[in-house]
Image (cartoon, rainbow, N blue to C red; front, side, top):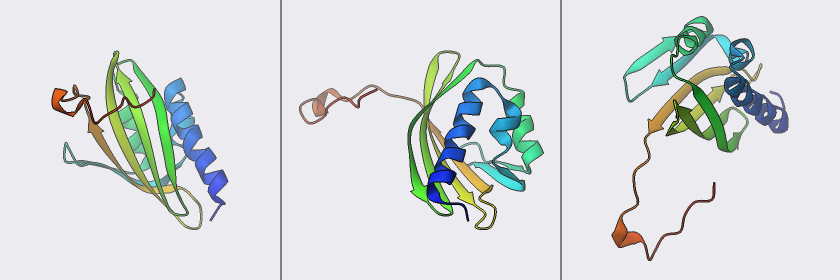
Length: 130
């Protein structure tokens, strides 16, 4: 397996390519038989071509901001804000990598829309830095 620093750089490049709309570079991280799951919609996309195909047809203007990439070895988590036509959606991507190649073999993505803070927690909370 490639070293963690190399894997982190490859994952960052995946998100950077997503931001640039460079679909070939964005999907280079996936194994040919990779699986992408969206648990909230119940959808599974099987194979790099299907994963790339469902993302390539997006009508919205998208932007990607990586908040944090955590992990090591065969398991990595990316916390991102994906903005669709100006509306932010928080996303968590869990990537499982092939131990021999370092390619993504299974990714699960969760999406959550922002919501206003509860006034009764104001004394306990602070704003997360941008």
